[in-house]
Amino acid sequence: MKDENLLTEGGVLGVLLRFSVPFLIANIIQALYGAVDLMVIGRYCSSESVAAVSTGTQVTQIITSMISGLTLGGTILVGKYTGMREEEQTRKTIGTTLTLFAGVAVILTGLFLWFTDPILTALKTPSEAFELAGEYVRVCACGIFFICGYNAVSAILRGYGDSKRPMLFVALSCVLNIIGDVLLVKYADMGVRGVALATILSQGVSMCCAIVYLNHKRFIFRFTPANFRIDWHKAGELARVGIPISLQECMVRLSFLYLTSVVNRLGVNAAAAVGVASKYDVFAMLPATSMASALAAFTAQNYGAGRPKRVKTAVFAGLIFAVLASGCFFLWAQLSPQTMIGIFTDDGAVIREGIPFFRSCSFDYLAVSVVFSLNGYLNGRSKTVFTMISCCFGALCLRMPLIWLAYTWCPDNLLLIGAIAPAVSGIMAVYTFGFVIRQFRRDLGGRTQ
Image (cartoon, rainbow, N blue to C red):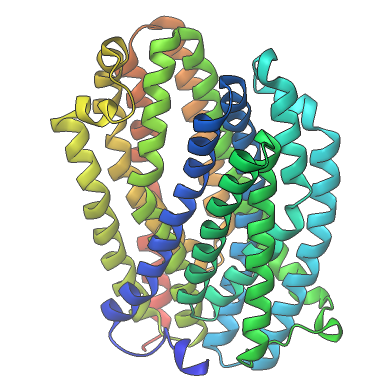
């Protein structure tokens, strides 16, 4: 597999695209993952079951955000030592990452099983769906070990320079999940429990297949009990890099949950319109999130190899790609927002409420593309404290207070409420870009490759 991890060799644009496209495909598959669960439940079960899975998914997304932030720390460190050609350090980092995440999985499982009801209460779960939502979350919590293991293995492979195999593993998981949904919900009549069980079993099978495959291919790390040990120096590095990323992911998620709770008070039409917009947010921002992850691994490897000029080229190329790709959704929202909403509902009142919100919030597609791409580079440089402070400041000090002010003074103005997210992202893009330029000047001033 050594010939597949050379992010430090070859044309920058070609390497970056070959590495980032599988990221994008994997993220699209993951976005469809939850949609399929909801579609199956909606077809074969009651509306209470639909509400339960919808709410329960928000809880599991919190878990996934925490885990993906922490695993990105593993991607960055594996990438750094791979770029430095330090195979022993790479193995120690992988062993430490996997061992720590086994412990994290046990702790998170206990916490979410214990606090399921308080979390669902805080999310204002409808009473009719509360018990079913609790059932969904508890079953998914029992599979956190698989979620941690699957994400950790994928993060390690990406840091090593391999984004194709994680894509194949997530595709396998998605296919198994669809089959499991149909079998357990339609034929076994297990309802919400069946959907949750299909999710964790598909991820478990995918994780096991990944481990068996990598052992067969003689990956740099052998998945044997003797290799699962903690190097405390590497554990400290992982904590310094991964915890800030995890925290910022959670804060961003919290701020958008707050937006949902506020809009829910404006009536069912407004809530439905913003709910439809949130579906498009995921897909419109996929190019940016994929490019950010690719840039993190690319940056880590090339700085490890002492090649900062390649990184500068990659950052600006990735930035342009992300903005242009997300710009397609932006143009659609500006020119014909009614057709976007119409895909999900033909209710005229919802479409009328949603048009101004779509036109204003869609500017966030462009602003977020800039912020995510720049943050991907900074994460790869292990500047995760800056990105954490930046995201927490944007979420807690700007986005949430401004949403509260807009709701208090102009509760019926969805155009204004929708404009808050892009305004905050625009501010973040400006000061993040300034910090990145300063970092480039400092790094390139002392290195010549």
